[in-house]
Image (cartoon, rainbow, N blue to C red; front, side, top):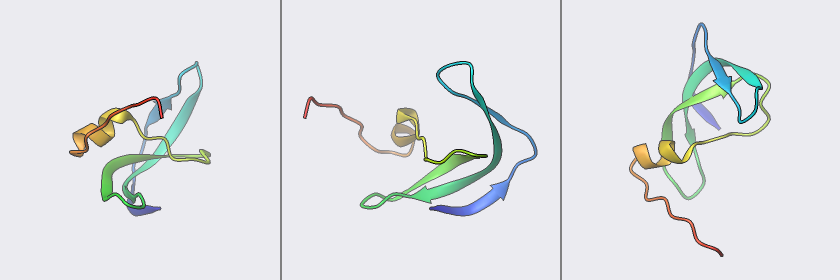
Length: 68
């Protein structure tokens, strides 16, 4: 869920391929069992939230990967 969604005039987001999305806002989101993540882009037409590992790290979280 987005909190304090602020519209932005112009922005583009590049996906892994050549696809691009239009960024229409920036907000903070709440993730169950975690706190808030700030400066998350709202990308028009996207059906799921995509967060980068660096966003978690920059927000003070420890990020680790394991096989399980």
